[in-house]
Length: 395
Ligand code: NAD
Image (cartoon, rainbow, N blue to C red; front, side, top):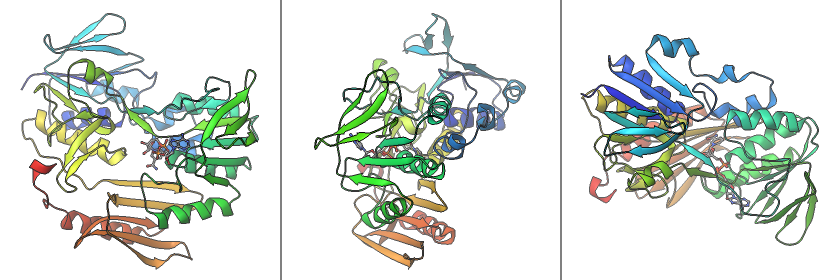
């Protein structure tokens, strides 16, 4: 086992990998480089509680800085890796420094997808991915009454809930014919659409954004159909893009994510990739998937640590996700895409129900609304019913 580990990216996956290596008695050096100016932190609260509170960034840190020092994990914050030199097994930093590795792990995550419309550079236009985005948003929100959110996905809906609690006027512009289309079925999307409308959000589906208008700062948005809506603040939340440019430049295979095998290895035996930035083979679902969730960041990192520690385990998760909006908890397990049948179980009008997605005789996914039991039992059944159904060669 080589003894120098370098991790690019300092998010949840990087932190877990370092922790798991030390828990597994890895005695070599562990060096983490992250371009954000913060210690590794948890991202889920950014679009929820952290946005509405005045809590400091430290409240989100996964471990205090001295913990990493005690563990002999060198966390370099505010450091950008410019290049991976595979032939010399080193990474080259923006300041010209270098770090040598025996194992390199790309944990570069995703970034907010950009929209190409006029006015994106105006003051008052935001995306939300990092602590610093939220710190800026908090300040801007003090003077903003009319909020336009572009994108009715997880971030769009979670932020809309926070904004309504703060009595702001909120419009959601969703390009597709329903909200949450990437992640769930019409029945669940309709539930959340109605929930937000009841809480006073102006939800507009099938609506494209043509331009953001204003002099120095945003004052309005123009829609594809020519309509104009006044706006003090625009949040663009139209999805995530894998940060796979370093890997591409290093000659590693990428396809909207760094392509890895069932052990998180790239085509270079010294280089792994973990978490949101990867496209991994799912035998359960018979295809390659890119998973944007905390579960994947943590469990994928544990699998890489096991490989480095010399007892590799193949990784084929039942992914799970959650979202909090107002007083509603959505919990999802599995991947429902391509389901043949959706069965609603429970009391939908009362707001406590689940939807089971089947393909043939297999349960492939479940969405539970305020129903933790249905979620837990669904997750267990999905794990059993999707296990090793599809041969790895197809994935
Ligand atoms: P998303 O993919 O969940 O939703 C993006 C939405 O924007 C989609 O509904 C899409 O149809 C819509 N859209 C795309 N182009 C558009 C356009 N031009 N005009 C209007 N709408 C458009 O992505 P997100 O909400 O931006 O979240 C980004 C990332 O953060 C994702 O990885 C997400 O999984 C993660 N996240 C997850 C959670 C959670 O799991 N609860 C919470 C926050 C963020």
